Image (cartoon, rainbow, N blue to C red):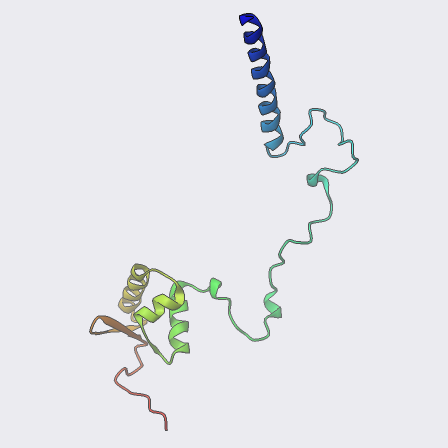
Amino acid sequence: MLWGVVGLLVVAIAVVGVFLVNRRDSLLPGSTGSDDDGPPASGATPAAEQADPPESEPVPPDPADNQSGEIDEELLSDEERVERLLEVNGGRMKQATIVRETDWSNAKVSQLLSSMEDEGRIDKLRIGRENLISFPDVDVTEVEREE
């Protein structure tokens, strides 16, 4: 009786082992899931042999199609993005607003603004616990009044 149980256990382990090896082979990239080298029985061609690309591939936008003259933000350097934000906001912004609008960390914005200030591209003015960032030619003491 004991030998029958041991034999059944060995057969079960062998079946599970064969199943796992076949499953692993079918999950490997480039495998067709079959052991023969011929074409699949259904007559379908493997994906690598298809001549037509799938229609769901995104097509990069043509720069000539951009009629509004806007520049893709992803193509700008970090410094250029900050300068563009300053231009849009009248030449001055709080550092916290730059952090919020760029979705960058406080540390990244702080380091970037410090290097831009060292290069003379911007001015930083400490007001309490905040920094007011402006272009060098913008007078931050001017108050805009609506008339």
